[in-house]
Length: 204
Image (cartoon, rainbow, N blue to C red):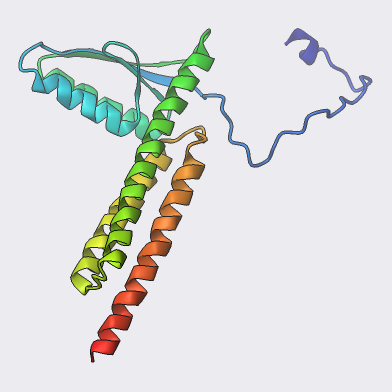
């Protein structure tokens, strides 16, 4: 750092040997929000409630009852709210803002792995959706009721992916497969819809 501050105009211009990919997302965390909490052992549903809330936010556990999220206004607001709820459960909670001195790569890897797990789950559900569409084609079951049901299921997948993408702060690699799988679902839904419309026309 000292050499950088001592640099003068007479110094030669640095050689750009590795230009960064403009499409690559910055995987350097701007900082972390860490929630350290303790909840009464009974009733057990309280622990489950907090766990679900943190999972829904995309937080990762550094250890038992210590959860972390990349720093940000939305994350801070959500964790402040959760802390308040924990206190109302007669628990204790401390919300801290920090930077990682050592081991940040491990924290980032855990965060990326959590997002990839979510993307993989979406891919699995997309495969189930596609199997359902194929089943309707095989059975030649082309009705508006079935189309509406499939449209609802597809929208759930769209909304689910959007939520995961929103908390994917560093661009986990699993997103590509999820995007591709959901696009395929959209294509097959359109193909099924076209057949339903065709059957309706032929019926009249």
